[in-house]
Image (tube, rainbow, N blue to C red; front, side):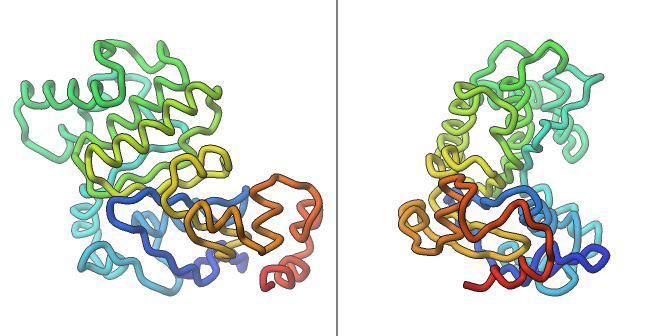
Length: 255
């Protein structure tokens, strides 16, 4: 897929496949094209060229109504959780069910309690988002993301802004829910430690291009100096973050 904004290439002919039932992590620094790729995959934006396939359907050719139907099979945990501040925890999690189903209130109540149990937050239904910690907000957002029993769950920087213990809880939930629910998980992140703990497969993006992919072990043993510099967080190497010359970056994208 390819996507440009005002002449700036944000996604440069990236080809990817998310393995069913596995956790795929899309790694990259700020401005690497991670979020652009995710927006195209979930149908929030259409690529300038290329296609997006979900099962046996090609999503970029669907009408808006058809795309909305397919999105019901997808769950999304947003970076800032994106909860409604005016709604309590119960209504935040129940919101997709009220919007997209005609389930009875008692059924909705049971489903919300089940999802809260899965994320380890039983009994907080009546609290408001302002009463929750950052880690709790993420877990409530995750409960809402899985309330429709999706086939795929997307995570946008799930550990961003969390303390190490809360980040560890989210990492464990991603892995556990992936196994318990049998979903496919796609995680956008720049957190190296977290990514290597949860991933079955890793992609690394740099300025819109995919520069590496493989298992965590394959990424760690990569001989590409760009990959080694990124995963080690070294300021010295072929990726000069202090440079902004576009032509220079284009030169180093191809080894």
